[in-house]
Image (cartoon, rainbow, N blue to C red; front, side, top):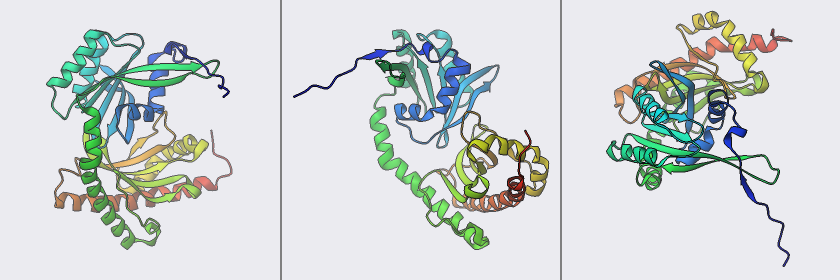
Length: 327
């Protein structure tokens, strides 16, 4: 039997990859949030912002996980009191359900501090410590990896139980909500009748105009200004033209908002592929809402999606008819 040639794993200092925390490491974390989600055992992490103001400070990375908020503090080298304090400050200021410290190495006293916070916290609040490593084989590009250093007791088991029980109950609520929204949209206008299958997730696309105009009209349960909410959005994804398309639409913001009937939330979503034009119905938690609140929310979403497309679509048609967009 011939033994194939084997390589040797070699550690790579993370400063050789990311030179600056705020300018290099934080944007990379935001762009590769899926790696963070995988390490934490959390699906559907969505980046809400980087360098988010919290009082006189700025949280490195803020994400939403369903209707909860997750805050990340990242750093080079070994953990220190300064970054532990910042993590707690940001979690408190943003009323976060999850707080994550990312570092190259965890000092024993800081590992103990995070474990203590998990012991004294309620089930609605959890603290994590992730070691960020990078490895290469021979001359290969360095490969990053998160190693879980601190997590709540029985977190992995809790995640599996949530996937089997709690999430399925929540998904049933999503399924019922999107089914009824879809039915209402179908009754209003045939242009909304492409979608036939409701989703089990916290969001659903109701109209996909990517092929012609680079936009999708979506409803999503998320968070806004710290509160659970229902969001209606025109999500822009025109590939390499997305940034230019967003700028052109934003330059006609007054015209679009006049047609829509109120102000909209314009989100360029830096470090992500797409951009967003949104409106919010809040506060609303699908788990805590009663039937009357959900009925009102469905009516709002149907009306808002229709008004949004009515306001945005004519401008999009005009822009795509142009031979060249101005710089």
